[in-house]
Length: 331
Image (cartoon, rainbow, N blue to C red; front, side):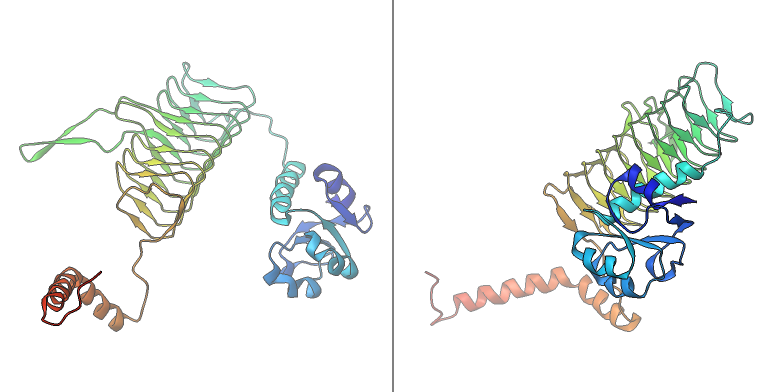
């Protein structure tokens, strides 16, 4: 339990109300109780501001007058960002003291390097030549492969595999010949990787995840992929080998990016889209056939299959019209 005064002292903001007010939990506006702290991040939820039972609400200057008339509030420039930092502060204050930096059940190779401030959780495996940087955390059952590196202040959640072999095989008379994956995985600082995500090692060069990247659960990153700074990907994204993703991109859940493609900085891919070509300009892109009632969807899908033929026929009609007697010539 924290006091409002402690929170504002740590994180800033302009407090309307008593600094001695105790806060028991953080909660959304519609579920907040009389000892909870909540936040209003978007004007569309302002009706909930007058109805909430929260002890205090974090608001922008736009809602300062309304919120202070209701009760205690903390006024900040960006309530959502403030709330994000509040969750970090809250967790630090309530987290138990970690005594063992490397859990007794973890397996760390003698030639691996683990920083003194890093935490290696239960049943983790850190293989030969691997490195874990300062203040990074490997939760339970994480595997960090040979010569792979995790930078500083990273969080790697349970079940993540970093540095498994990439999917590389050469056809040989109806069979497959394995291509040994001789690169590694290099992960920058302040990266977070969700549960059961897999990042394959490079074939010859390294797979690279730059600083500040956020990967959700169950993501597959193929060999030799390069992901730029502060890019975020939602769950179940698949990135095929040798794709290059720029900085400050977002990729919605379930989207697929084919191999050897490039996405410029600031590209945003909608959920469940399939990226089949490189994208050189920043912006939002969607490659998804819209959902519909099944009967209508089948009709539209059938028409889509004939689109090229329809286009060819239309161009023929246009050419015929232009050649018809009496047709005005284009200037």
